[in-house]
Length: 120
Image (tube, rainbow, N blue to C red; front, side, top):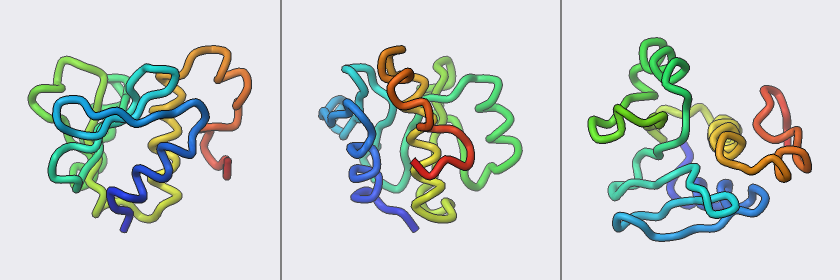
């Protein structure tokens, strides 16, 4: 099961990513734009996710994904770390969120990131 240190290591391995404390928790940003947070209890992460996909994820796997009340109006979803299969799944989720926040210059430079089945 991935833990908070795995989240930090994987997130910071993505191009042009940094960590910044905001709202008393670690947040991960690409080119200054937030793509993941590690809330206070560090048992879950919040990542970017289009609302239509988010709703489908929550319905399909409610033990893994949920929507925090204060994030309901935003395109974010929570992911329970204990429900992840392995670090590969964590990397896929973080890379997908990274891709949604990354500027076009980075997307062009790293087209393989976040694509299903990519070992990036």
